Image (cartoon, rainbow, N blue to C red):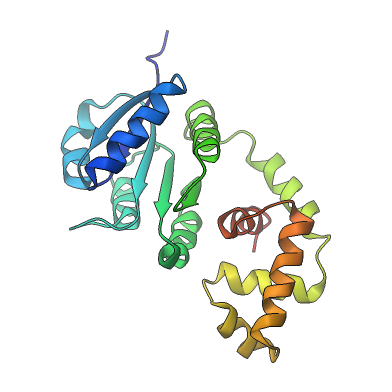
Amino acid sequence: MPPEPVVHVIDDDEAVRQSLALLLTSAGLRAQTYDGPRDFLAALPAMAPGCIITDMRMPGMSGLELMVHLGTLGSTRPVILITGHADVALAVEAMKRGAVDFLEKPFDDAALIAAVRKAVHVGPVDVAQDADARTARAAVSTLSAREKDVVRGLVDGKTNKMIARDLGISARTVEEYRATAKSKLGVRTLPALVRIALRAGF
C-alpha cells in the first residue's frame, strides 16, 4: 500500500504556516510545514509523496523559482501557489510552467481544500486534463469576441487600463466585459477565470 500523501506547506510567515496546517489537518489531510524553500529542499530527498503549497513571494527564492528548480530536479509533485493581488501575472506564468493551481489572498478555505484534494488524488499526471480542457474550451466558446480579447489580456497579466489601451476602449468597459466573462464561465475571481482560460489554451 503506498504511503499516505502529505501536503507540503512552504511559507516564510509562521502564522500562515500554522493556519494552513490547522486547516488541512481539520480536513483530514496530513501536512508538513517549512519556513522557506531552502528548508523544503533540504528535506526533499526523504520526503513523502504528495503536493506542495507555496507562497509566491519569499526571501531568497520565489515560489516560481522554486517550481522551476524542482523541475530541474525531476520532481513531479503538483504545486499550488498562494499569491497576493500584485503577483497574479507571476502566478499565471507559473501555471503556464505547470503549476496546478493558484489562489489569490485572501483565499477561500473551501477552495484551497478542493484544490489540494484534487492535486493529492490526481498526482503528478492529471488523467482528467483532457476532460478539463474540453470543458474549458466549451465554456470559453460562449464568450463574445471582445470578451475573449479581454480574457487574453488578463492571462497576459495586463491591468484593465492596459487592456483598455490595447483595445481602444475604456477601462470601465473592460471591467464590464470582465464581469460578463466571469458570469458566463460561472466564476467569481480572477484566478478562477484565468485557470479556465489556460485550460482552454489561451
